[in-house]
Length: 159
Image 1 (spheres, rainbow, N blue to C red):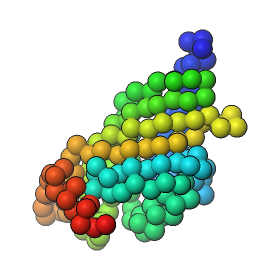
Image 2: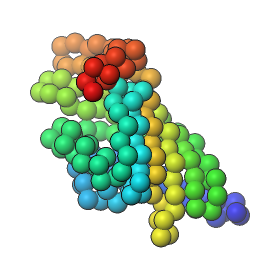
Image 3: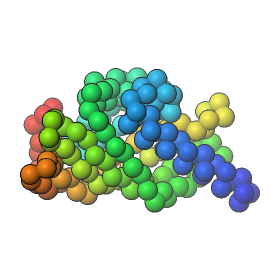
């Protein structure tokens, strides 16, 4: 692939991930569903979550979990590699803030490790693995760092 064409494809993937964050934070569930392949696979097990296969199942789960919770997702420093004319992989640095309850918030730092496929001329996210480097739980009076080990244990207990 020519350098200029490759840069255009990489920019399209960057735009896709930007829409991921905006649609999620604005709770535009129909638009958010449209950025995933039907067989999308989410793996948040290392961050205390679980594996979900299927875009409809994933969007329904996130919608149920976060529909009434204000969130802010920011991704930075993308490392995107085109693996063919219609496939790619990428790693994104992540910072997210999620309101867990009134006065109680999560501030998380980590990475998304993802794969992409160009389907009917549009890039879609086909898999995403979330890992956390740091998770802070805070309110206006206190802040507590939740270690990775504690997050994994809590995730296993919640299943």
